[in-house]
Length: 295
Image 1 (spheres, rainbow, N blue to C red):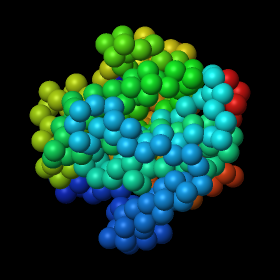
Image 2: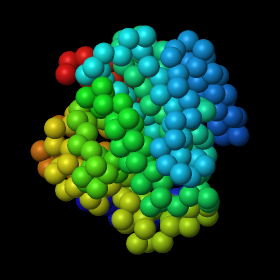
Image 3: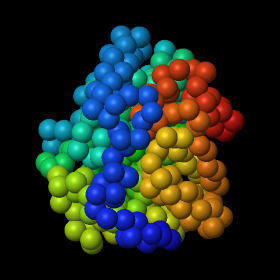
Image 4: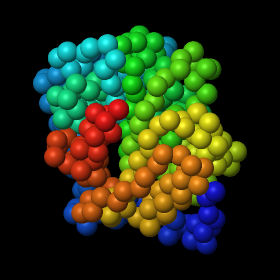
C-alpha cells in the first residue's frame, strides 16, 4: 500500500521532487532533457540502419497507434520479444526516440517492439494504458512466433509496464507468456502527480489517478503475472520521491510472494540510467540478457 507521506510536502517541494531534471548532477536541468532526447534519437536512427526494422505497423485506427518492430537476422519460432515503453511523463517522447537499445539486444536473438501512444493532452490516462495493452496484443497476434515476452519501461513507461502486468488479457483475446519485466525509475502511485504541474496536460481526477495507480492494484499483478520475474530499478540520483515510490512498489509486490527484486544503479541519474541500455556491457543490459537467456 502506498504511503501518504507525500501529502506533507507543499506544492513547490512536490513539484521539485517530481521534476527529474532537477536532480541530475551531470547537467543543468535545462540541458539534461535535450541531451537525453538527442542521445536516444540518434541511437534510434542508428538502430534503424543496423537492424531489420519494420516501421509504423498499425495496432489501431488512431493516427498515433503505430509500432516499430526490430528483428534479429534470424527469428526462429519461440524467439523472445522485448517490448519497450517510453517515458516522458505521458506527454512527451515517442517511438522515434525509443529504439536506441536495439543493437545490443537483437545481436543476441531478441526482437524489440516500441510503440507510440496518444501523449497528453491529446491522450488521457485510460486511453494511454489501453493503447499499451492493445499494442502488445496486436503484436503477439500478428507475430505468434514470439512465445516469450519481456517488458521494459522507463519513468512513465515503467508505470505503463506495471499497468500491463495487471492486465486481464482475456479482454484482448490473447494469453501472453510474459516471463520478465524491467521497470526503471517509475511512478506507481499517481495521486501525488495530480497535485503537480505534470497534471496540467493530463487532467487526471482523483478517481482516474487511483484507477491507474499500480500500487493500489497489486492483487491484479499477483493473479495475472505470478510467473513473471520483475525487477524494480532506480537511479542513484533519482529524487527521494521517485526512490520512495519504487521501494514501496517493490515491497508491495514482495509481500504478495511475487518474484521481484530491487536494484539501484550507482552513478546514474533519471536519464542516463536508461540511455546506457545501448551499451552491451551496461549493468541493466546484462540483467536483461541474463533474464531472457536463463529462461
